[in-house]
Image 1 (cartoon, rainbow, N blue to C red):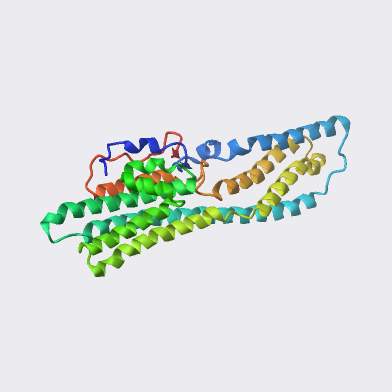
Image 2: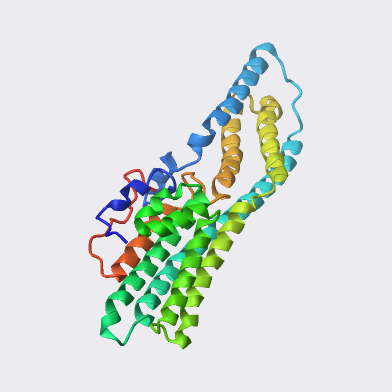
Length: 330
């Protein structure tokens, strides 16, 4: 396996996963903050509803139209029901987001433990085999690193060519032939455990101690795939989007008679609330995608890589990814 130069992973990181890092802002600064909010996503929709409210208000004031407004009770009841639906949808989306974060937190710990056990349990009493043992340990640790990056690629739909520096040439060729590269790397790790046992470098009683974190990696992968392949039912999302749009567009008709010139302001505030909640649900329900509020898989993968290469005793390491000045972590 070739030696890896400092910063060799720089080509792997592009604007794929980003998350807004909360800052210690004052109440006023948070109130006026636009970056990291849903406003950039929904301002056009809010502008449409507010514009409609302005037109209806002018028609009402100067032409006497819409003198019979929709009963306010209707909007109150529908708004309450819609709030409950939005709250449920956002709660479901956040559960998916948080489950994804817990799975990747488990991946961090499992990878560290796997590497630690590889380096401490695989050994030989014969000095002439020390170099072979060290080579196998290094290869296995790099297989764990490659597994982490391959899982990120698998969830993001990224190309696997970026794994080439982490693998031997033969492993990389075989990996490309598999329809499920992370599973191939897990298979290779299992074969390496068997090889260490066959050479007498791994105590039979310790085999299960290496199989345990390997099974843990596959369990974590299965949990991530469950989130990715089981979206919130489309019919539910369509209905919710339609109801929010209809409610916000109909709102001026029910308010123009009672609020008069204040109608556009109230419609703008209510529309921002409902459309914003709807957009937040969209943003967090698929935590492995490419939106600003999704999980920072690139940063987590880099952190695992640095940790494991440090365990190997390497000193030339790529830097950990840090949030940029705008608070985004790639």
